[in-house]
Length: 194
Image 1 (cartoon, rainbow, N blue to C red):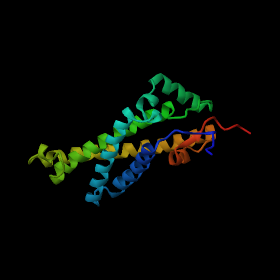
Image 2 (image 1 turned 90 degrees about the vertical axis):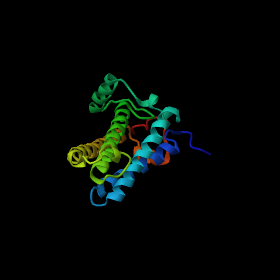
Image 3 (image 1 turned 45 degrees about the vertical axis):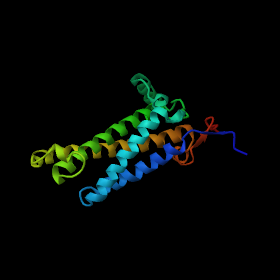
Image 4 (image 1 turned 180 degrees about the horizontal axis):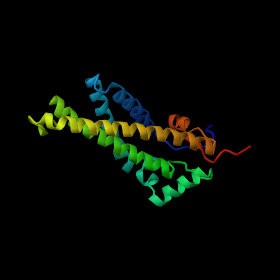
């Protein structure tokens, strides 16, 4: 018999996407210029994952849909203020700050991928954007590489902020959000403070 105090929040696609994205980003970031083939495949993997997640954000399950976790800037700001005062409301799905972080991470990753494809095209004359550059690769190589490194590092910064947010939210509402992203289940109600 299923525990009625738990509710299924994160469907399998969201959970597999999340942890696959974590692994792919770690591989892409760690491999950098030293292991270009591995780095490129990790980048393509991230792109594929993001495209699937974007589609799932439109047609997916309740808590996976963008419409469930995109909030107005004023709501996000108020949520952050309430969090700093340790009185933020609990959300079953993404809270307003978490929803904003999902969008920021996705945008930053997409920009890192696009600039990475530009670097790959300009420096290696390879990849789907190679034909854009012809023989001008020296002109674009440095500019695109700087932009790619910026977005990769900015994404890493967002990841650190995301992890801190998960820890704060877990402590504030006395629930393990990491375990929820593994099992898919969260408590239906905030655990009592005893």
